[in-house]
Length: 70
Image 1 (cartoon, helix red, strand yellow):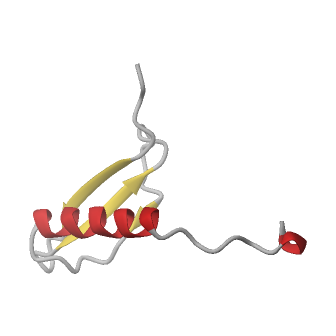
Image 2 (image 1 turned 45 degrees about the horizontal axis):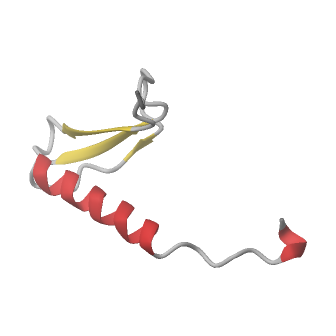
């Protein structure tokens, strides 16, 4: 059985009513590794944007580093 490597949660900011994303690594971590600013109007928008960012990056990897920088 494969265990998840990361956990992504949308969190509502009480002051603004907007949503942020928290990314936990490893998935069972108590505190998030990454937290965005609360800029999304809904949890669904936050989650969809996060998935789009991950998919875009995975489909367009960074260029290979020059040999002298490896």
